[in-house]
Each structure stands twice: as C-alpha cells, then as structure tokens.
Image (cartoon, rainbow, N blue to C red):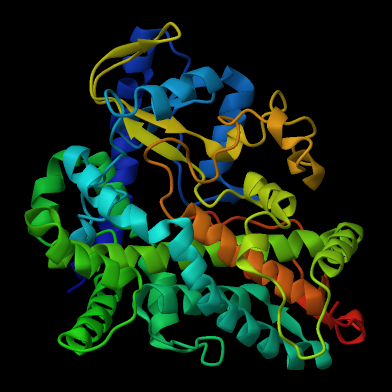
Length: 500
C-alpha cells in the first residue's frame, strides 16, 4: 500500500521531469538550433512558476527576445520550437505561405472528444469545417445576435446596481465573465443559463475548467512523445472529461428538443443545417458537438478575462476612465427609460482604441503556433520540415521597436488618426491570415457592448483588496493568478442625462 502513491499521474510526472532534465541536458545543448546557427537559450521549463508578475512561460519569451533579438530557438520539454518576432517573416508564415507551407497549428493529440475542433483540424478537413462555420460570423449574423447580447448586458448592469449601492468590493470576472457566458450560450444554443444570477450554475463551473489542461499529462507527453499512441488508446485527455461530458449532455438535450419542432437560427442550428445543405461535406454530429463546446468555453474565458483586464486598468488610471466615460456619454446619451441607445453599427467602431490597448498588453492567446510542412528558407533562416514555429504574441506586443514605451497606458496609439501607422503583423491578439480567430468580430462586439453599458452607469476604482501588480496564471489561457477585485461606484450622471 505504501507504494501506491507513486503510481499517481502527478507523481509520475514529477519523476519523469527530473530524470529527463538530467539525462537530456546534452541533447538540448547540441540540438537542432546549433546546426542551423540559430541562438538558443539554456533549457527552461515553461510551466509552474510565477515570477515578477508574469508566468515563466511568458516572461521567458520576453527575456529571450531581449537577449537574442527577433528570432531564436527554444525547447519546450523535448520539443524544439522556433520563435519568430520578425514582422516580415510573420507575413510569410501566417499569410503568404499559410496554405502551402504553414497550414496547420500545433496539435498535442491528447484531445479526447475534442479532437476535431476547428482550431486543431488540419489541411482539407480544416478548410471544410472553417468554410461551414464562417457564415455564422458574418456581419448580418452578428447583427441578428446583437439584440440577444443587449438583453444580457442589461442584466449585467442590473446585477451590479446593489453592489454599487452598498459600495461593495467585487470580483469583476464573476460578473463580466457571467455576462460573456450567458451571451454566448444564448447566441450559440438559444438557452438561458442566467449565470449572472446563479454563479454556482454547473454551466459556468464546467466552462471555467474546460481549458485548464492537465499539467502532469502535458509533462508526460512532452518528455515521452513515443507514449502518445498508448495514452490515446488508454483514453487520456488534456481536457477534463467531466466537463466535455457535461456540455455533450446539454447539446444532446437541445438537439433532441429541436427534432421536428421550431428552433432559433443560432450557431448550433447553422451547423445542423449544413448536414442537409452540403450532404456528404456537411459537419458530422461529432464535429457539431466539438465546435459548439469550444466556441462557448473559449469565448467565455477570453472575453470575460479581457473585460476584467480592461476594468482593472481603467481603475488604475481614473483620468483615462473619465475621458472614456465622457466620450461614451457624448456618443450615447444616457436614458430616462434605462434603455440603451447603443446600436450594432456603433459597436463596430466605438471605444476601439481602449479595447485595443488592453488586448495588446494582455492578448487572449499569448502564443500563435504553426507547423512547417516542408523545409523552407525565409529571410536567410532555415525552417526544417515539421518544426513548430511559435509567435510570442505577448513579447511581440511589448517590442519597443514596434511600440514605443510599450508598457505605458496610451490608448491613442489606436485612434483613427494613428492606427494606420501600426504594422498589421505587430498586433496579433486574434492572429492574422486564413487561420486567425474565426470569432474575432463576434467577441469584439460583445466586449464593446458591455464596456459601454457598464461605464454609462458605473465607475471602477481600486481598493485595498486590489492586487498591484497582477501575477499571471501559468496554466491555461493568459489571465490573472488570483481574482481581480475592484470597488464599484454608481455614476450620478447616469440618472441625470436624458435622451436627445
């Protein structure tokens, strides 16, 4: 019985890590990058530790850039990766040669039931899935969904009213994340989760956990890639099985209710329609399930976190927040009947510079990855076949050659007058090219709507519970290690203004 603990996944992962680090130091030292003449820092583990306000994963990219320049090699566990921040190379990799040489993202394989999500699909299969999903994110479709979003933004402002009245300290993502999840669930499945009122709802609990991949399993597959087939056959998955099973049950219930009856024209229904419209080229039942799950889970996490970062930075910079509120009040005069005058056409442009500032410093995805399909030379750099090319977006957005005073809060960088001077390959919060984030416009509209409606009614301020600076979570998507806590203050102007 005393030996049983050594057979747990966590214990094996730790043993594997320390043994492999010792054995493989020579492998790292005389690896592929020395042969290619590409600088490479000493081996470093990209997990686990939080240092100087950022996880090792992100801060190491930044420090490597400062040491080696725009291109360098690195190892993530046993996997060699070429880091590229040269904007001319990025244009070739992400756009010009995307289809011919860099069509696919990195795939860790242990994806369980989510093996066929659009972000992991490859080559012709990816093109087929992407082409079917694209009509769901056209301007016309998003405009139809905008009225649904507004219902949830009003619920958000209503839920914040008693907190502001009592001058309570709030965990901002509890509210902003719940709004994101409710809006996405309604637009995707036409279901009302109402997690704003019920924060313990299983929908939000499973959405929070879905993208928290298993670190021990990540380490084992990284050190021993030859074990991947065995791990796959054994049913191991980086994504929590209980969360996937929960969403599958929700979707199966929704689909069962729609068979032979009326339905909403939502994201799920558009995918279901593809089965009749495209015959053999439509999405399978399993592909529909996978896209529906990842759309809500990934969108909730990234949108909710972006809003939380925005609230945090506005609270730290009250003069900027006041200026933003003045612009909102001028553009969208507050209302007697408490009905928003914010329209879809406005949402495409309004407050863009403030949002761009936040997703520059805190990009939803800290790295973009592509796999070379053949050996190619780009700007004198040889990229071998099957090499993973990683774009350190977090570091790219802090490059002082591209962004003077990169850490400064200067939303005017993205004003209409200045944004034309920004190199499109220097700003990649949603990627760029054919494999960019398919839900980018949808997410921006949803976030801007919440930004405008909340700031029409409330102000954020820091308090003794506010952590400054923030420490980043080294697992999952980019986000704070601990909740962002702020004080909410009701604005008197919200009741004083009238409609024009």
